[in-house]
Length: 216
Image (cartoon, rainbow, N blue to C red):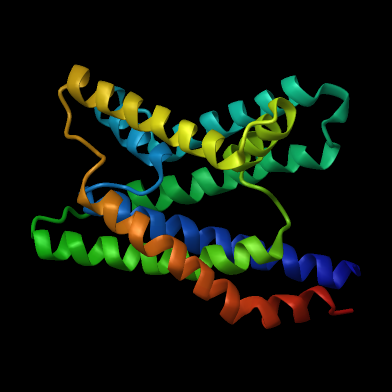
C-alpha cells in the first residue's frame, strides 16, 4: 500500500465513520428505541447522570480493548491499539451531532418514525463499505471474536449475550432511574432493516472498495 493510497483509505474511513455516527444520531434523536444496545445504555446514563452518549461509548469500547488485551496477552496484536483512537473519534462525532448539531426535539411520532427509518438506511449505507474497507474492527465485535476463540464458544452466542446484557442493564437503569425505556419499536425496526441493508450496501460498494485497495 502506497502512502497516497493509505492516506486516501484513512480519509474514506473518517468519512464513513462520520456518516455512521450521524445516522446513529438520527436514531438517538427519534428516541423510540435504538438498535445498538450500547446506545440504549448510553441514553439511560445521560438522562440519569449527564454523561454524554459518545463519551460512554468511548469508555465501554476502550474497556472492550482492555478485555482483549487481558485475554490474549502476548498474542494481542499491536495494531489492535488503533481501535482506541477510532472509537474516540467516533464518540466525538456522536457527541457533536447529538449535542451540538441536532439540538431540536421531535414531537411528532411520524417524524420520529421517519428519523428511525432514515437512521437505519444511513447505517446500512455507511457500514457496508466500512466493513469492506476493513481498516479497523469495532472493539465490541473484536472482543466477542477473542472470547469466542479463547473459550471455544460460538461467536453468535457471545454477541447475543453481550446485547442481552446491555438490554438488561438498560431496562434496570430505566426502572431504577425513572427514565423512559430505550428498547422499543425502533429497536425492532433496526433489527429487521439493518442486516439486509448492510448486505445490499456491501454488494453495491464491493467493486469500488476493491478498486481503492488496488490503487497505487
